[in-house]
Amino acid sequence: MAISTSVISLNTISYSRSSSHSYLSPPKPYVPSCTLPNSNSLRKLLITTSSSSEMGPTSDTLNFSRQPEMPSVSPFGLSMNELGKPSYKWRRVLLKVSGEALAGDQSQTIDPKITMAIAREVASVTRLGIEVALVVGGGNIFRGSSWAGSGGLDRSSADYIGMLATVMNAIFLQATMESIGIPTRVQTAFRMSEVAEPYIRRRAVRHLEKGRVVIFAAGTGNPFFTTDTAAALRCAEINAEVVLKATNVDGVYDDDPRSNPHARLLHTLTYQDVTSRDLSVMDMTAITLCQENNIPVVVFNINKAGNISKAIKGERVGTLIGADMEVHHSKNMKQT
Ligand code: UDP
Image (cartoon, rainbow, N blue to C red; front, side, top):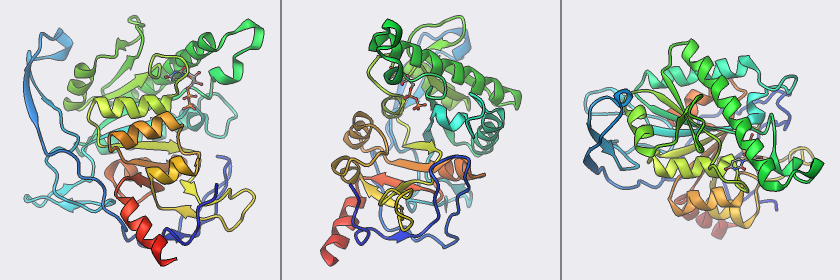
């Protein structure tokens, strides 16, 4: 289960799994040790849509590339474009916020301080022109797998309740975002048209292009899946460039830090590391979907102020999982 600590460049940091504890990050400058996959070059299709009044004009240019006009930049950080303006690593991101993260110190189901912190940081990056979509979990309210079998509840029904829980979180988050002026749409994977739009991929993309935040709720709409899988799926569908997984921990460690005080935060990992060593980053379906679609994943701590906007801007934070890390990783392995 544990990764050999010699194979990846590591920094020692203090750690606590519970959100009620504090975390410390090493104040070292970060030197990126890998190159992220640069996916497809820009492809734009002019699509004529018969859209609803909310969707505006009938002729929309939809961006079907995962990598819009971006200068090449390091895995973390920003560079300048030809106009001298900062260009961020990502132009469209998928932020996954678990229900647990929304609950903060767990004293209440949803902590409004957390939703406000998320809203403020998302606001700061949307102002920079970065498009932000969210997938929200529901584990703070209901987890299907924990309740299946209780009181005659079968797994599918339990999972539908879990998906409904994600809608509750999404509506709360939307309210907080709109309270500070961020135009936000909730799209649900199954119809609940009185409270939210149904998920329509092209409509979601159009919202993003117009600077709205889109919150995807109700997971994939199917029982036996998770919202991590929904995050990977929606990311691939809307051609977002990265899944940013906000958690209550600093990232992925080489060992269980609760039992090993020397456990170290892994700054980069390959998909292979995650799957072959069964690291509890995301469920297997989600990470496989990311791998197959070459979607990098950043796992970071939502409880540290500034982390969300850092992650969205592509600055160094948490653990970066991707494909090209493999080269660097195996080189290091040969040296060991
Ligand atoms: N769920 C589901 N299908 C999905 C996504 C979620 O059935 O595509 C259900 C499942 O019961 C899960 C619950 O919704 O336990 C809450 O989602 P998740 O556990 O992924 O939330 P998180 O851990 O991110 O808070």
